[in-house]
Length: 158
Image 1 (tube, helix red, strand yellow):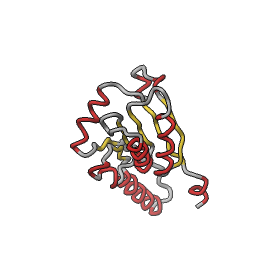
Image 2 (image 1 turned 90 degrees about the vertical axis):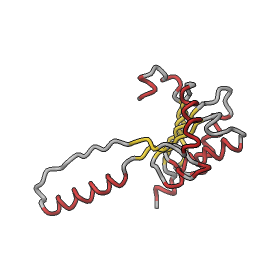
Image 3 (image 1 turned 45 degrees about the horizontal axis):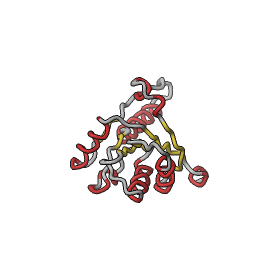
């Protein structure tokens, strides 16, 4: 939505892949083969971003020097020094706390009306040593490739 509001709708490029590190790796190879590479990738999950990083490293690209990568869900390994990527934190702890509280309230009073709780995600910056290079990449302008994550058939059936 942000890219559209900035007049960059034509630059949005979505690659569908599995919700795995391998999926991120394979999904990242597609835009690398194009004549005009993206300058940034937003992966639908941190685990997908790790695969994207692997593919970019294998291609000889420096992250975030040549291309920027960000993930989603703020997992612990997204903050590990050498592979640190910025990540969107979806407020999982708050989601769980609210869900438990609302369930207990509903059990105590079944006539209680339903409640909608809205939480805002936040961007968690990467390791400080990489932050300046990421910001320079974004300031240059970028084409976004979103590695959208979808579960594989195996994951759906388990």
